[in-house]
Image 1 (cartoon, rainbow, N blue to C red):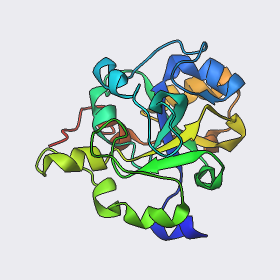
Image 2 (image 1 turned 180 degrees about the horizontal axis):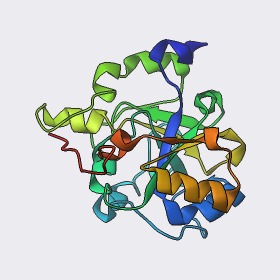
Image 3 (image 1 turned 180 degrees about the vertical axis):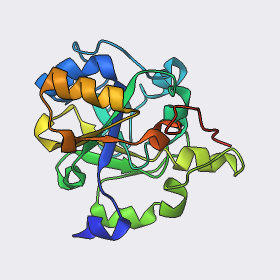
Image 4 (image 1 turned 60 degrees about the horizontal axis):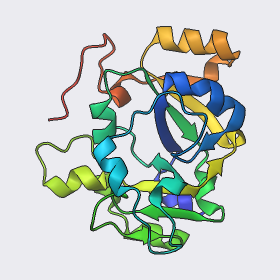
Length: 202
């Protein structure tokens, strides 16, 4: 499968933990949906996501966004919030009405693609970077390359959940009756050490 050559294990969506009730019930919905309880998006960026992509002519906000690399500037901005990362099956990329980008979808210089062969046009070494403060400004944008799924994503595509710590994992297992193997503790993804001390993006 063409997806295997890029080392993709999942497509990742970050959200506030308060949104899990409705996500697990209704699946992921595009930005302007009636179920969202806590919005973690940047309001300034939101204005730019009202613009339309040039392949299907839809507003970016009409899509559910995923990252190839969730350890990015969006996560760093929300590192003190109760965030979880939802890992969805990479096979979403083979569905209809899917777009992907070579950088943050709200930037002026973004390129949109809808053919799997165009994955080769993404700078994967930069997308998978761990840092950006000591690099050219464009690296910060490229690390936030996105997959955009039109309107909604069924919860059946969910593979697992990344969390910051053991307490969050225990809470999710109890509240949603989730198996332990479905939830992985990965503090580094949230810019935290195992002792919850904040990492630097620099």
